[in-house]
Image (cartoon, rainbow, N blue to C red; front, side, top):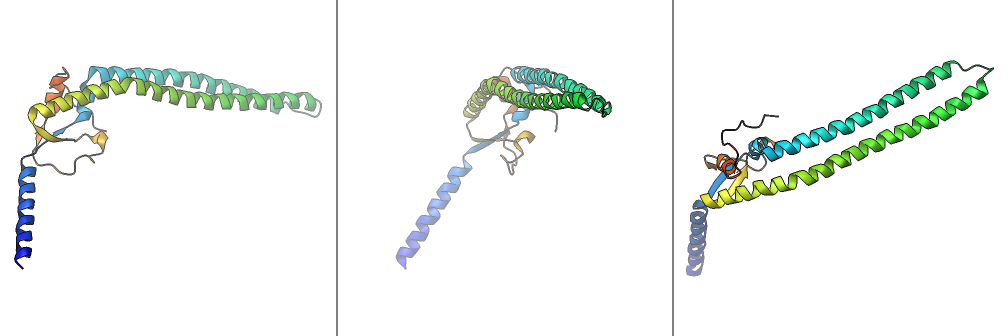
Amino acid sequence: MRKLINVLFVAAGLILTANVANAQQKFGHINSEEIYAAMPEAKAAQATLESLAKTKQGEIDKMITEYQAKMKAAQDKERTLSEANKETVGKELQAAGVELQDLQKRIEDARTKASTDIQTKQGELYPPINTKVATAMGAVAKEKGLAYVFDTSVSQGFNNLVYFDGGENITAAVKTKLGISATAAPAPKK
């Protein structure tokens, strides 16, 4: 019985020690969406991606216009089909069908390539920005003695923070560390 009581006291002591240790840890939170919205590098990267997407969409739209024109020409040609020109018009329609299928495949290939090109460009532009932000967040967290920093941005789905009461918002300090105005407009809500 005495051993059991000693074990209970040791366990209670360990639990109390763990709670005291946890109470000494500082927590902070940040809104990474707000930081990215204020960063000139992120704005430039977004503008580059939007420009690339617009260019690619323009190329695809030209191909679609060509497809629609050829489809209309084939439909018009089909209306002229008669017994007298059946063989000639039939061959022309068959050739037009092959050409339309080829053009349709080229459009799909162009869409796939555009998507891949945009993802590749995004992969080139954002990692250095992410590294810069992560470095600044880590530096601010160390300066403030924070054990944990949670992201409260909407783009993270709020799943990085279930509940917080207080804590220290280091968003402005990270912006300052990055050389961004701490009063820059917050990111628009989605």
